[in-house]
Image (cartoon, rainbow, N blue to C red; front, side, top):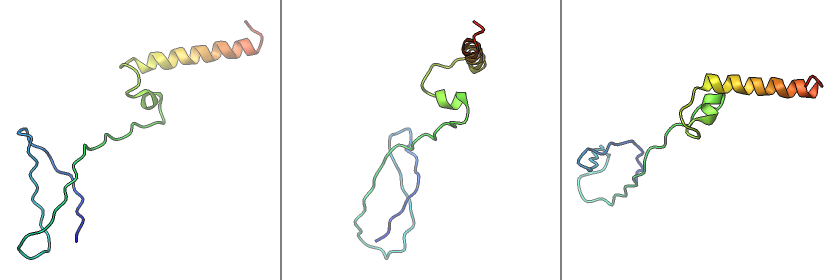
Length: 83
């Protein structure tokens, strides 16, 4: 028995064509095929853009970061009794 892992492409006609060389003699074989979509790579979580990817509409992340910094500064001034 052999287990073969590989990616294949489904054509526009909806058909999957598989041509894989195996080291078996000619004749009948039992074959099992499992088909599943390829998972999208995870976004990078080291940036705000990566953290919010796919969770919010496309926004100007520079504006979001500036607004977040402004809120942080206001919060810190409140803690220091400046407000």
